[in-house]
Length: 417
View (cartoon, rainbow, N blue to C red):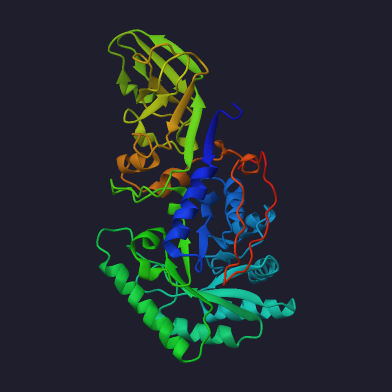
């Protein structure tokens, strides 16, 4: 079925969230927005125009294909690639990838001296300079260099004729937890490290550490720039019932009933016969399943809403039976007048709804990132309203002291993810 399910991406909500971040960090600090994993599942084609419209200085991606996709969509501002190239073993392929990234003006995160020298050599072959950043591991224990080897790579990057050092950064392991002690320790170590290197005459470029949680909870981490992901899309940590009123969720997943059937008492519904009707029941089909990111763990344990129609208000209906690859069954018995084609909200953009992103994350004992990132390719992303049709007039954006004046992005009207 073509376009059976839509993810409505609220442009006004994204802009509200960006404004809340700007208010927190002030006009002199840059904002880098994480758009990896298809903008956390919200659709790169839908999100990039909003970021360009509001003068966002930089985006961050997980790998080179994501960076090049952003360039193909018209993003002209800086791009930070968070992942290294070291997983590629074929040296010829590595060199091709490096050249492509240099020509695409992508800033590499450097994991080693060897990779730095390879990138620098390719840049000189192209008669260009490659842009790089150095990630410092202050306690995350995942990627990045420990402080001492990081200092050595920084010095080599600054000295290399084919390299421009754009910046250095670290990443917090627990800035979203109630106890900020470890986050503060990480920040203190990172700041001491950068101050020592600057005293030694090393020009580090932009210094940044703050993710979404730290941007809102740890003001001392704002430094030269903040890197926000989750907050841009309007969500907070799934373990907390107290969300910031400054942020507005940006995604609503909607569909329509594709079937409405009467079943007699004692009739099983779905694989494994995990639900049996207790009385004559009206069962509806919603064309979404686990292949679309609607978790099978929600079987018999979630709700959707029928939207107001035919003088009826919004009605909550339970998910019954096991969720299939492509379909979910809901019990419509108490929903009044329902018909094939009636609109259904699967994931609500009301943060208080029992089927909001954060509510589903709590229910599945996971995080909001996973709920949105797993929304599948069959779910078409649609910007609501499209930016070009928005009644909001763009305000002049002052040049940022780090990145200068914002550049335009091509229209992505009617684009799909």
